[in-house]
Amino acid sequence: MTRTAIYPGSFDPPTRGHEDLIRRSLRLADRVIVAVAVNSAKQPLFAVEERLAMLRAAVPDEPNVSFESFDGLLAEFAVRVGATLIVRGLRAVSDFEYEFQMALMNRRLHPSLETVFLVPAVDLTYLSSSLVREVARYGGDVSGLVPASVADALTARFRP
Image (tube, rainbow, N blue to C red; front, top):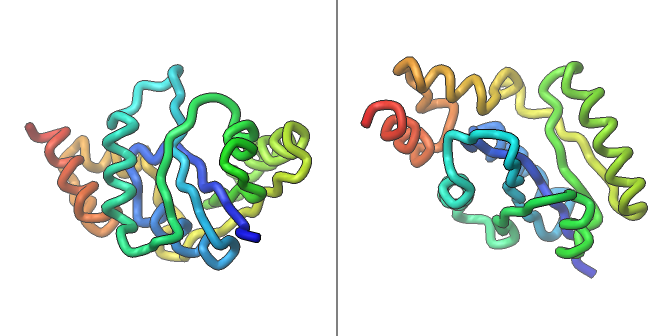
């Protein structure tokens, strides 16, 4: 039986931290679906298809990783794709309360769905998509924080 995990997020834009967690998730599951959440309440910097393309470019060498988008409840998406595990990253203690509530709700909606929290690599702990967007918006160097294709996309977005 194949164990399928979902690593959900907005990934706007994908960072080296996301890439780290995608690769490490493969130690926990046979197959990892990186799921870009569609949130109509937010105004993302990049369209869903752009984020999916950037994620594919960031992790091109992992045959057991796939990339999809979803709209609606994560628990329903998990049932649809046959996943039993959700992978989430915790950068700081402040992330825990929200993630804990989401894990409990997802388990209530889908009782066999487990959530696993991964701590990022030490050198990536401070990294967030919003911080990367802010640095890029003001012309800062984000090349060490994101894959090359993402750095190029950020440059093109903010310096047309």
